[in-house]
Length: 265
Image 1 (spheres, rainbow, N blue to C red):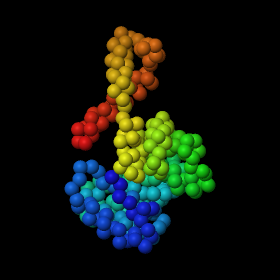
Image 2: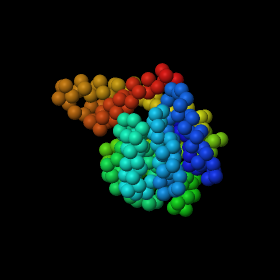
Image 3: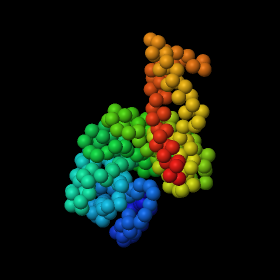
Image 4: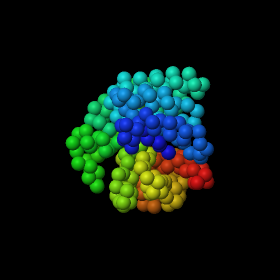
């Protein structure tokens, strides 16, 4: 769950809303709780962090990151607040959102800045506004940014990124198509802006039973072939070699976490 202090809050209410966030951090819950603060170059970011970094906070969503210096500065500030407040150093997760042309252009340097960042996110709303693109239903105009974000994340050795939100709450078919496109590009998940979107996104990013069964057969058949000195086989008419096997193994590695989540919910 991501609570918001940025675009969902009117400028005049941003300071007052921090108290509501602080109160939410004390309530019982079963999942992780993140807060999207205001961008680092605004008058609110520092105050947001000082107000909300405390026990109960799992992570920060940092919008409009455009430079390594910005990310390093926020990472340093979080470290000082963790030390000051008796939290484990590095305990607060930090997820930057790439949503401007400058941020996308400097992405490799941003990810090489040596911070606590484990994954990044893409924000198409602000990105398309920044570069004067039309954000269309088929999202073809997002192809370059999506590919760049996934590739840069892989090159930096961090987790696959999180895809942008889908803003049309009435268009569940569009949401599913957007999620499937993100999955195909290599994103690990998609941010949601309404609870009704969560089941659709989870369904898309959760391997089907048929996909799991096939992956298990691939791994099993290839292990047998490899033991016999063979490094490529056919299964159901499909050519199977190491890249296909590695993909199957990667899929199967997700399953225990998915099953654990399903038991909790």
